[in-house]
Length: 637
Image 1 (cartoon, rainbow, N blue to C red):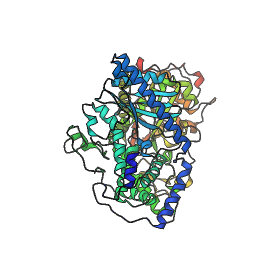
Image 2: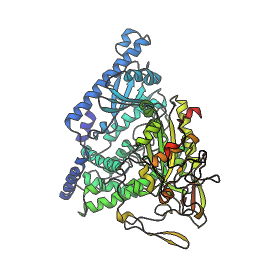
Image 3: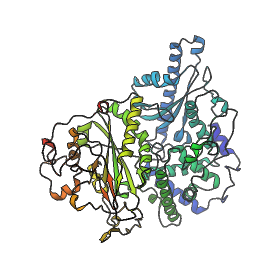
Image 4: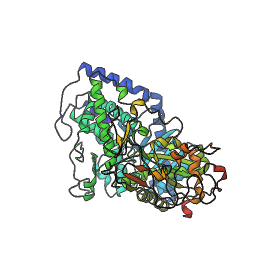
């Protein structure tokens, strides 16, 4: 593009708010390390080939024509004069990774902006345009998320995933040569249109503010690959999205303008592992404008003072791109920055290689306690709508759990997993998310009840209320939360997902008169939190109870958990197996899994005796003898 060409031809100048930390040119060793970095990334498909690039370009051309056709048809339906109808125009702009030039092979979606003239309303975009897409043979997996911070329509167009946002300008026509960098294009727009336009405006401004595009792009490719492999790439889940990672990398490029990617990756981890959060990351000074739009400024806006990891967009009106980040997700990312620094230091010393940086996080061995969140629906279409809403609200659950005084970390795994065959037969289409929990170390031997019910119930209420407001709540849509320990995860995860536990990963656990004592593992794992590597001890009179706690389980659904645990069970479970799996207890105070110093409380609406259904007397190890299951529907609640 013209702006890219101008950037590459510019003489080196001053970039960013401060002077560079170093202007040192790259050494021969830096070139070698950078080439090795490129080779290490190739197997992950981060570099797109020309054939795929051509296909994306073709798809965008078709989509652009599709948008122009829709806008013209809409003008006719609104009885605009023919002279205007013929020239209304309309245009698709790209932003995000595609515009930055760092899209990956095969799996990258395209962030796109539909710009329309003044006669087109947002409601038209989510109604008539959505219906037009729905009738297009090349369009698959179509869904709209109108209540998102930036409302979006998601779909696949000829195999390419598209996230399309919308903005209308205060102009009668939208020409092909429209330039969105001019602040005047924001005049008289509502806040949702301004946010939509900012995607494109921010991307172009980032490209303008880096000293060397080639080094920036290669470094960003490496950082994005690392973030995805380590499970910290997800704006919607409270980590960072593509534009935030791009701004962090751009800031490092400003501080080391002559460095190659191998050095820039190392400096990235160095700077941000030691960054004084919530001090903001800025690529340039905050600007004022005659438009007087609200900008990020904690001195003026009280809500901005609560942002824990602010990264500020460089285009007016400047906003914090990381408003979703929580205390837990920031802590997880800082820990990963520290690991990245250690690994890249070793690489640059010749003691390791780049493949170690991209080793995946073993999330399912990292914690002792987990919550499994399940979203299900009867049809594929309903399921797509449902999981889109549930996923957009999971950070609410993380926030609720963080506010529990006994929880220090609530770490959500951004990747969702499909339900197993048993879940599919029971509930239709199923998606699951997993959250790892770290509990504060108990200060005394006295056990305290840790009640997770309120935080989870508040989250589910939020989702159902939002679904009702959007009129998408259908028969069969439901959310369920299950508290499990690490050793029970295999009941929920697809076969092969859990890696075998390495011998050196298992912590030595010894018991003494005062309780359980955790010894440090050979990998140097900290035992500062009392939940991470201790076995739980249950009271002597209920040793076989409270190992898994199912939330909001109805009487007719009581056999469902058992079907998950023993899908092929035909006979009585041995006492040993029963001790590991029985989840329910007789009438009395509800108790979940016992943690050293704590009991995790989860509300149970149905009471059981050990190994027997209280109402029918049927052994719970025999699912076939259980009462017939009635599908639960939130609409009948």
